[in-house]
Length: 191
Image (cartoon, rainbow, N blue to C red; front, side, top):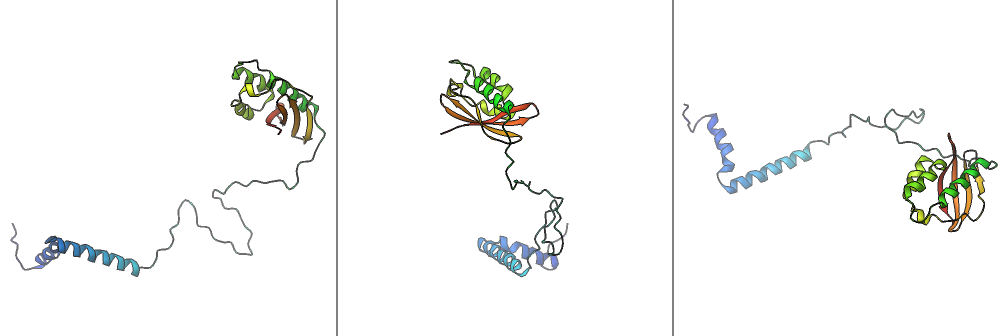
């Protein structure tokens, strides 16, 4: 077993590392000195370059003379809005007929009728997306009588706005042309 002496390199190291543990004052002084050295090193060292995410390349401004080429990274989807609204066309009688049939099914709900039975009557005339929204409508709020004929308000090649008068007010029904023919895609109550 080696003998420890007060001479030599190991003795010097023991004294340096053991100094902070001699008393609480030494420990506090060592912590303050270490914090001061770390702060000083932080001020002296230069700022690191901005880190780059390896999954997404850094974007730079293209030169003014070059054409802008879309990057292969995930770009946000672009929504194109046509400059001119679609051209108005003559109303399609088949679309108006679908609104009339949908209206008959819409008001056909005896007191206490089951919502699923009511939706089953509406399903042949309604888009799949809108029938799921219709599931939240209470049939008791649907009205009871159609008070007039359905009339087209506006018409394009693929959609029509049709006015349908009922005992609870006039409904503005939107029908769209699908691969199955005209289907109700939305309705709003006027006023």
